[in-house]
Image 1 (cartoon, rainbow, N blue to C red):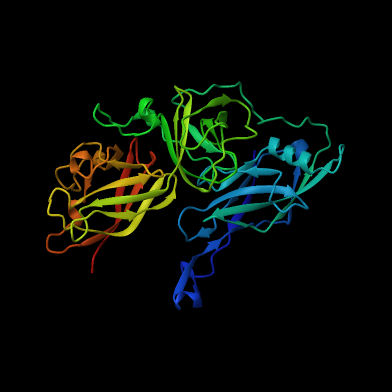
Image 2 (cartoon, rainbow, N blue to C red):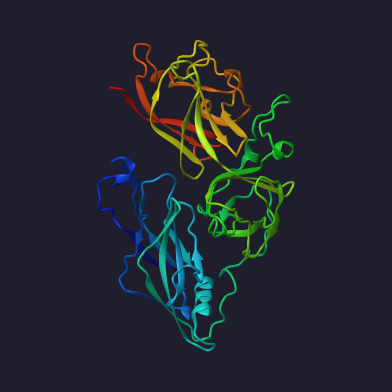
Length: 434
């Protein structure tokens, strides 16, 4: 049976979504500063006492704080010595992505005891813990609380997970998850592209890089933290780990080697700057590639009044999901009628741009609410501005010949399998233009 400790987020006092600061050097204009509210521990006592000789796993739970800027807010539990400042914690507990709890196992609790005891033979060790919230390149800590760990030495401390199983080697088809201190979205599941590989023919190279020859079996868009190790876990879930895939010798933008190990890696691959990355895996060839995502936008063909393309920035909201809110759906001014109501998702990796569009090579008509669900599925397309290369068309119910634009909508691109067994996109929160 597990003991459960609750942590609640501090409720934001300000009703406004942003803090507004006046700056005289900016011509009297107001500058909006994203509001960042960290998590705050709420506990019955200032110190949690744990008997390691008769230990029950402790689930640490919280509700997230808030962040109103671009990107996502992540939380993790950090444990340190009583005189530490959490810059080099003795233990870090990363929750599964979007799950607001993490388990302090017997192995982890005993590791904290060993790191914090004053001398061999001690039966009491003291530590402190907090919730570390990260967003927009900033880090905030909750109020710290104490840990009192008791161990007489009559029970042999476990060296690993309490119910460690026989080693299970990785095989394509198993679940892969992000892990390591550098994984800002630790526990995020990689998309199993081996289930539905990108449609590809002899005349189109969807990848345009070293993956052209071997095909991506897994893929993930995820946030990484600079100079901290990243690796992958596999198993039934992010919490039930069978083993690890490491790529310590990897270099960004280069096809690198994977290794399958069965103990938690002490090191891992490290990126050089915080940001959004795409990671692709082909385990059949034992290869991995890490690429920085430098731009993500929706390309609207022929949208401007003069018929030019418009690139609409998208916000990354976590778990491989990109979004634009309250976007005006309208015909463009392009005289080429087949282009002025088309769009496609574009993602840049430095100079190269890869475009994501329809599973079909040509969408001749605007979709209706009766259009088959797989119309909204997404895959890699080749480049170019023509409809024949996989662009989508605006939904017919959001267009009106008598009024342009007639509606706004929130458009969300899911580069994960949250909506089924393909990448997908949706139109929601539809509103008539006044």
